[in-house]
Length: 323
Ligand code: 5GP
Ligand code: MN
Image 1 (spheres, protein in one colour):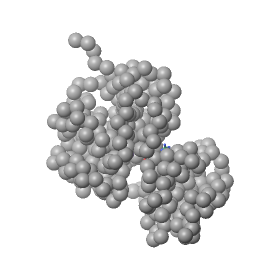
Image 2 (cartoon, rainbow, N blue to C red):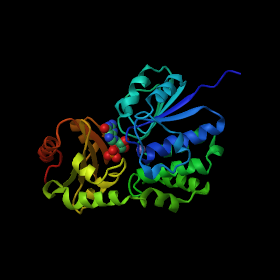
Image 3 (cartoon, rainbow, N blue to C red):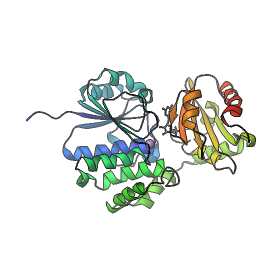
Image 4 (spheres, rainbow, N blue to C red):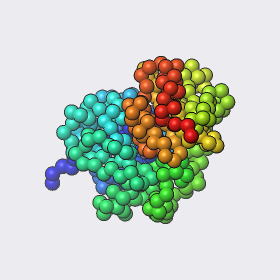
């Protein structure tokens, strides 16, 4: 019998619940069919996802580059999950580009660039995890969606919809969620593991963001929060600690555009959210070399924090014309 191709699953830098949920969901399906599968990610994932089934098997390029490079070089099939551009693979991009594996994208972001041989790119969905459910069913492997798989996919759907509060006006999202619940998962318990496990530092950082770092421009319906390295150090920042912070700025009455600017090594990471018509995908694409979804997107700035904030404030009359 011919030996089976090895499979690698790659997701995006600063992975979130859907990135890890969709990747581990597919992983936990494929291993049941005796495939040799590895999930590789550019950098660490937040600790509130570390309980997810088989997460310990994930290889992180930042700390294990040689192993990740070997996995990619030996893979015959590579799945790219939950991102729309080669740049989002960060440090894995170089070995990925050299690989002649069959490459398959499964993703729900707008305007994907072409970096795979095949693409399932659907925007009218809650999440990549939902697409993975469909993909597995389409393969005729629904019987492999067990409790472990269901937990992973549930995390992806729940986190990418802000606990079923946006990007979820699809009957199918709830039908699939119902199927996942039928697999015996405890949705309430999962919600607590993801959302009620803040460290004290993380909670205090949130308080600091809202009381000291929030800037509001009512005339432009815009609010933003900026965090320098010094701010982050003060609260012993751990990856994932600012997850969800930008949504608080968007929760202010009358605010329809919110941004979070975070200082990293050599760049400022930009996170944007909007309500209604304002397309943060367009804004991040045009001004911050990024993209994402209509109401949730991100990008980067390569000038200092004060210069980035000045640039953003100057853009406001153009991107959020006052009425
Ligand atoms: P977040 O603000 O949570 O980092 O990202 C919001 C959405 O935009 C996510 O779906 C994420 O995958 C996407 N995104 C974030 N940063 C970038 C970026 O730099 N480029 C692109 N293309 N998408 C991004
Ligand atoms: Mn997603």
